[in-house]
Length: 142
Ligand code: HEC
Image 1 (cartoon, helix red, strand yellow):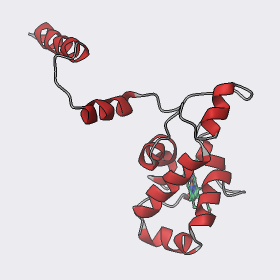
Image 2: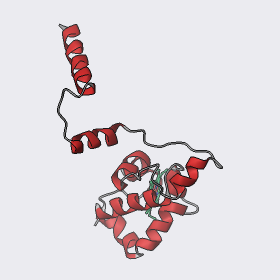
Image 3: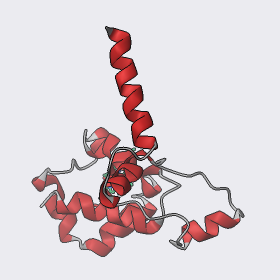
Image 4: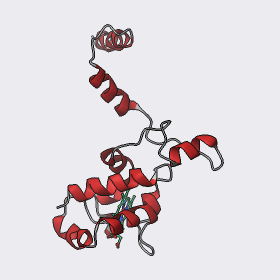
């Protein structure tokens, strides 16, 4: 019984790979976005890094939500170390009042002397991706 279920799942995967299951381009793109690796490590001086840093075509920018889920949620969902929790309107009101420029800078450079380290520790994130994550948190906290 159990092996039949496994077989069915396997057959489904094979059918998907063979293109037998008709996915729209949009569905296909969504699935690819969901399963692509979260971060690509690149070493300083590596040519591909320059492209990524410039927000180039090689590495498509991740959405604010994707970056939040991968790099910010650990602290900003739990309040770890005093992080303002996403969705906590009171905790965010004073911060939002400082303006988006200040919050973007806090995201990219961190807040010295606190648990908010530069880019929340996501060194594979571009500045733009971190700013998008800040936008995502703010949009869900006001
Ligand atoms: C290791 C825990 C941790 C992670 C991971 C983390 N943060 Fe934070 N964050 C904090 C803490 C703690 C604060 C509160 C700092 C303070 O006291 O002002 C904070 C504050 C912030 C603020 C408000 C700063 C201000 O000027 O008021 C922003 C914006 C922010 N984080 C963005 C992010 C983004 C974007 C990410 C993911 C890329 C992220 N954080 C990941 C801990 C974290």
